[in-house]
Image (cartoon, rainbow, N blue to C red; front, side):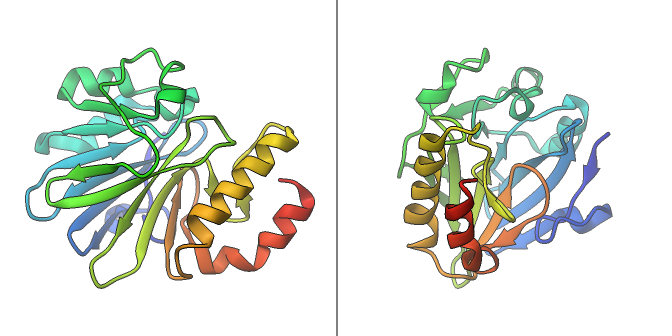
Length: 221
């Protein structure tokens, strides 16, 4: 059953699902049996919108979209729990689909725009940057927003959570790849105030997770 979650701290309940950033409004909804987070990002000046992961419960996702329309849907990776509602959402809204080409082959809904590492993703007047993180899947994407005058914000899919990187299926090479990418592309280049919004569960910050990096490396997950 769907519920709204606080996009800042993950708490369940009511209007706390909406967070206002400079230039961007973020609505977070948790759906499906795995409590997937669905993020609706809206440009504050133009009203244009992008959805991150049409995960499940299409009626709930469409309810959050409402009458405001939807321009784009970015799917972070090809695991079914992150795109189970994609077909219906696209059919109802006409939204353009975005995905990394390495994972697009695993989703039966066609990808309209292939997104690669470092490419810009625009929502009206807002610019976000795609970050390719290899390991949980070969084509996992995160989206980075540098809030004007504020912290950075990263929607990480299943690549980074509070307490560790994403599941790498007990494959040491995949863990090494994901750990390396997360450290090099997130921890090494962004400060501790950077907010992390994962595909499941509560939000965190790089500062909260940084002290555990050595532990993650030593344990191998």
